[in-house]
Length: 260
Image (tube, rainbow, N blue to C red; front, side, top):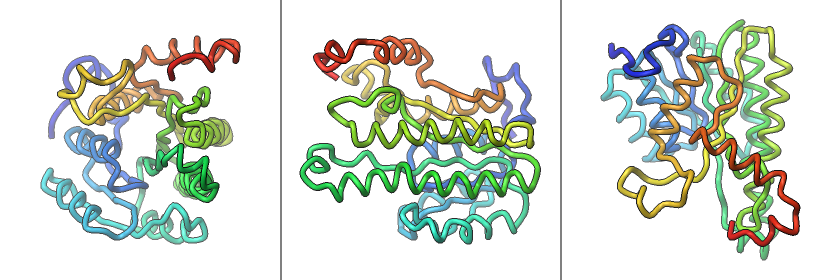
């Protein structure tokens, strides 16, 4: 088993999960996080998502890293099935961490023309996430321990003209996850909200990417450190917190003129 190196090594390895349930099993961020946790301590991974070749490929990839990996059918847009799907996983044994990683950015221009597209984004990123998070939180509370990590977005801090449908859904999810964290405080369940900026494919894209972007691997590193520190909110990159704080307090007339 690999030990962490660098700043993360100063914190306890035991704060990392041995078992992981990923909601959104083909997410690039989720898979980068799973790889990092498998290299540290994680031995059992559940990948939840719609049945697809991509889900099976993701499972095979993680198995090659030495983890026991199983898949479970999960549809964010079918909240009525969430309790059954997650219940099957928890019935197999304790789950140390649930990573809520599903979501869609959608097409802003199309969503403005076709309200049903906006509804699809909202139902996936907010309604579906609310349902899944409540079910996961209840299961974690019943077992008396575990972490629920919710992938939010910096876009939820203040909706931009360019993606206000996505941003508004993430704003709702972010507020909900913080409230759920307060509700579960003292139960043994740790809720952590992760707020990345835009995600770029990898280091090669860094030179042409906008400022305050991150790779899935950088977000995974931040998730690990957040777990070790028992953080409640994690910004990726960290400097994004100051930038969004400044933007949040700009007068609206000024904000709408910015090229965001």
